[in-house]
Image 1 (cartoon, rainbow, N blue to C red):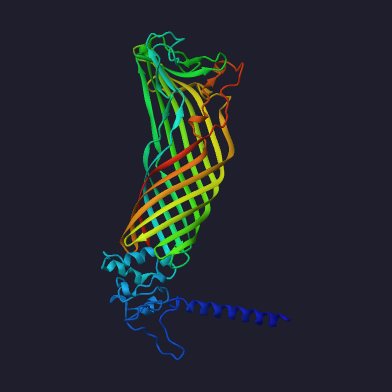
Image 2 (cartoon, rainbow, N blue to C red):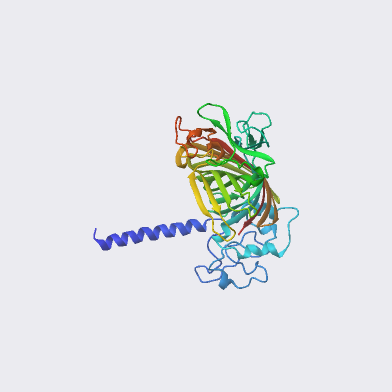
Amino acid sequence: MDRRRWWLAACGCFGSLFLATVAAAQTEPLGYPESIGEDDSGVVVRKRVDEPQVPAGLDPYRAPAYAKDPDGLLAWFQEPVPASPCDRELVDPAWMGPGEYAYHLSDHHCWCSRDHTRVFRMNYMGRLWVAADLLVWATSGSSLPPLVTSSPAGTPASQAGVVGQPGTSILSGNEWAAGTMRTGGRVTVGYWFDPRQLDGIDAQYFELADANYGGTFSNQGGSVLLARPYVDAVTGQQAAVLFPPPYTLPADATLLNRSINTSQATLFQGFDLILRGSLGCEQFHRRWLVGGYRFLQLNDSLNITDSSVVSSASASGYPLTSIVATDSFRAQTQFHGGEIGLIERWWRQRWSLQVLGKVALGASIFDTDIGGSTVATQTTSASASPTILSNTPGYVLSQPTNIGSHGSSLFAAVSEVGVTADYAIWSQCRLSVGYTFMWWSTVGRAASQIAPSVNPTQFPPGTLSGPAQPAFQQRTSDFWAQGINLGFEYQF
C-alpha cells in the first residue's frame, strides 16, 4: 500500500471513529454536548416549555430573563438549563451531582437568584470543585530527658544540679511534652470526569501552624544555681554542668547574670493526589475507590541556649565576659508512598454525610542535624567592640562525637480516617464540620535523638578518653494528628 492510500485509510478510520463518537454522545439523555441548533433541513429545533428535558446548551425559552445572549454563550456553556433552576419538574439528575439534585428536591429549597448560576456553568469548568477547611488539630507529644535543673545557692559543686541529689529541682524536661492544640488550613481542588460525579481526581494540601513551647530560667545575683544534667558515660552516674566549660562560676555570685532558654517547635504538613473510581452509584449515594500518592513532612526541633554575662568587680563593671552556649537538635521526616482507600457519601435534601478511610505504604526519610557551640566574648569598655575569647564545638548534649547531619530511611505506613457532615446553603455551596484522625507509624522526633550519656573527658580543654559518647543513633516513634475541621465547598 503506497503512502497516499495509507493516509486515505487512516483518515477514513479516524472519520468513522469520530462519527461513532458523535452518535454515541447523541444517545445520552440530553444530547450532550450538542447545543440548540438546526436539524438537517435547517429548521431551528425547539423544545416545548412543558417538556421535562431540555437539550444541552442555553434554552432561550427556559433561561432566566437576564440570560438572553445565546450567541455569546453557546460556544462555552453547554449545560442544560430549565425554565427556572428552582423548577423541580425540569431538573435532570443526569447532568448534575447528587448533592445538587438532592438540594433541588429539598422541602426548603431556596428560590433565589443565586441558583441561576447554573445558567453560566461551562462544560468543563462546571465539573470543577474547591474546598477550604479551617483545622483545629492536636498532635502527639514527645518524651524529654532532664534538660535544666537547679539547686539552692551554697550547694556543693559536686551535688548542685545533679538529678536525685537533695535540693535538686528539674526545671525543664524529664517529662512527656504533650502536643499543643493549634490551627491550620487545608485546600482541596477536584475535578469530575462526568456530570454525575462518578469518577474524578482531586489534590489536597494541608499545613498546621508551628507549635512552639518552652521556658526561660534565670539566675541573677546567685539566688539559685542553674545546671545542665547528664549521665556520666565513664561512671554511669548522674552528673551536671554548672557553667559552660572551660569556664567556671565566678567566686562572687553577684557578678553573674545568667539565663537558660529551652524551646521546641513542630511543623506538620502534607499533600495527596488521588483518583476516584465509583463502586456504588445510587441516586443519593456514592462509594469511591481511591488511590494515588501521599506526602507528609514533620519538622521538629529542640534548642537549649545558655546565656551568661560576668561583670568585673570594678566600679565600671568592665570588662564584661559574655558566654553563649547552645545544644541544637533538628529532625525532619518525610513520607512518600502509594495510597488506597474508600470514600462513602450519602445525601438527603440539603444534608450529606461522608466517611473516608485511607492507608498509604511507603518510606520515611530522616534528616537529622545535631549542633552545638560555646562562644565567649569580652568587652573592655562601653565603646569597644567585643573580642572573641574562644569558640568551641558542643556544649553538654552536643559533642564532636554526635554533631553533624545524619540521614536514613525506613519502611512506614500512614492511615487516615475521617467523617464530615455538610449542609447546602444553596445548590453549589456547602458548609461542613468534620473530624480527622491521622497516624504515621515511623517518624524521627528531635527529643528522641538526644543521648543523655556523655563522656565528660571531652569537655574543653580536655580530649576524649574512653567511650565516644554521646553517639548518634536514629531513634523513631509513631506520630498522630487529630482534630476538628470547619469547611466551605463550592461546585462551579
